[in-house]
Amino acid sequence: MIRTSGLLGISVLVLGSVGAMAQGRGFGGPGFGGGFGGGGKVVTGEPYTAASASSSVDKLSDGTTITHSSTGTEARDADGRTVTSTTTKGASGPVTHTTVFDPVAHTVTSWSTGSTVATQFQLPANPPGGRGRGDGPGPGGPGPGGRGGVKPTVTTVQLSPKTIAGDSATGVKTTITIATGAEGNDKPLVSTREVWKSTDLGILLEEISDSPREGSHKMEVTSLTQGSPDATLFQVPQGYTVKVESRHRGE
Image (cartoon, rainbow, N blue to C red; front, side, top):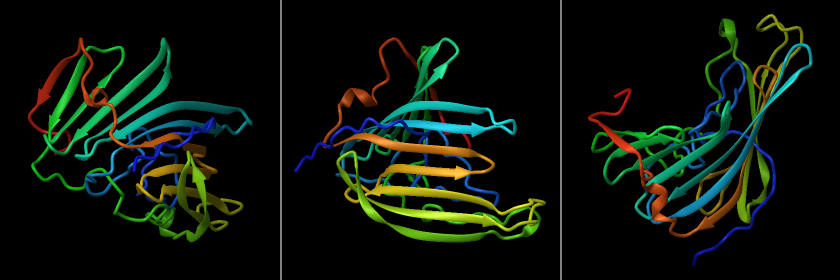
C-alpha cells in the first residue's frame, strides 16, 4: 500500500550518509550529495520521493557565527534508480546540483542550473557498493585515532523511536570524547551525532551533529512519499547537452 507522509516545517542541515564514520578528531559535518539513502547495495521495489531542509552553523573564535542553509530532494524508483538534488545560495541566486544514479544503465549523470552541459559517466557492470539501505559500517562508527595516535572514547546509545515526516524512525546517538591534553587541548573535546533512519525504507531521515571543530549541523527530511516518483525527475532537462565519458571519475 502506498503511504504519503506529512510535511514538517523544520529548518535543517546538509545531507549526510547513513554509513558516515566519525573521525578521531570529531565527526565533522555531513557533505552535500550523500543523499538520504546513503551507501550500500542497490535497493529495488521500494520507491519513494523525499525532500529535506538543511542548516550548518560555524562559530568563529571571536563569537561570530556563520550559517549555511540548503534544501534537497531525492527519489528512488522501483528499479533502484536514484536522483538527488541539492539547492544552495549562490552569489547570483540559488544553484541546484542534480545527480542521477542508474544501476540499470550503469551510469551516473550530473548537471547544475546555470549550465547547459550534463556529464554522464559509465560505471562498471557491477560497481562496488551503490545506493540503498546503507549496509556498510554503522552510523557514527569510530574512525582513526586522534592526533598523535591517541584514541578517543566512543559511546553509542540507542534512542527511543520517533516519527519524522510521518514515518517511524529509529535513532542512534554516538559521542566521541578526546581527553584533556591528548591533542594539546585544555579540556575534553566532545563531539556528538544523532542518526535517524526510516523503519520502512532504511533511508536517512534526520542527522544532528555538533563538534567543537566543525560546528553544528542538522538535516531532516521534511516530506516523504512512498510510491513511484515522477519519471521526469530522472531525465536531463531540455536544453542541456549530454557529455558522455567512457568511465567514471576515480575509476
